[in-house]
Length: 193
Picture 1: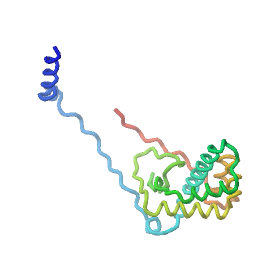
Picture 2: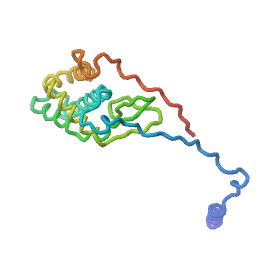
Picture 3: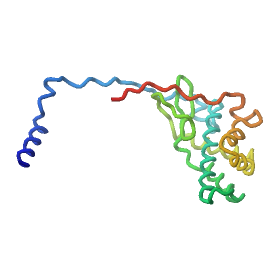
Picture 4: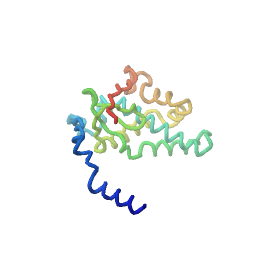
């Protein structure tokens, strides 16, 4: 019985069932073309974060600082860190590789994308690597130097919103001052089987 079943299975796989002859070829999948964002000379070559992306960059930095401090506190049993510990964590936060961040173009607007930023639901191409990691690291170090480690850690202890407020909106002169919060992107229609 097993030999007959194995022979039938082998013949079916090698010879086909003939269903392809009666049903026709499968329908062609719709093709889509998504170009990479067109970057200006400033966006490609400048060592500084372009002004139009600084608010997104600030939110990414605040997210990474929050994550690193939260992990360090978790190792200490959720207790407050000593000054030397949170200074070390902040330095480590700013000197990470930042490779998971990049820029994409959505509805004609360039946005920074990566962990801690609203996910982009539509079909898009993200340009990562290149100058973006260095720009984020430099900006992070600038925020830590400008605000100070103690003030950043104190804001972290009050919660993620307080840290974002301090770094990104603080004193109405942060990179997001006067801007509305980044809206959630529209959901793209999904063609799933």
